[in-house]
Length: 147
Image (cartoon, rainbow, N blue to C red; front, top):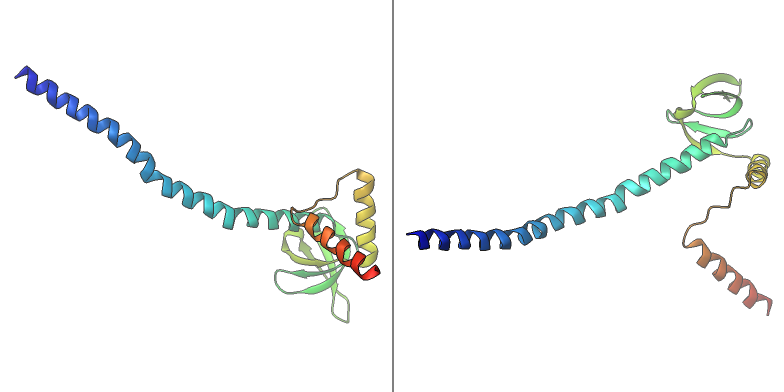
């Protein structure tokens, strides 16, 4: 009788050891799905939010903006977290929160000023991985046309 119990305990121990590996294998697809979802959905969205935040911080008087409500205007004043824009022919002044700005079109003068400030601050130019290859490609095309 004691022999039967020890055989049952050994059989249960063998099954428990085999079941541990199957738990990891059953969770692996879920881990891969979450990882793929992060790479395809969450990461690009955070990157876009960061870019928009940088654009909002670089806004200057004279830039054209479009609000999330579709109002188009030219920036007349910036104070703390509010932006005053002039719209229409009558230059109607409207004040919005900075978060209400959906897109910004900088004037050439303001672009140059922002680049100059960035250079003075010592911030390195941010480049993507593929930008290296684009410059090399452009250099090769210009060299081949020179010959």
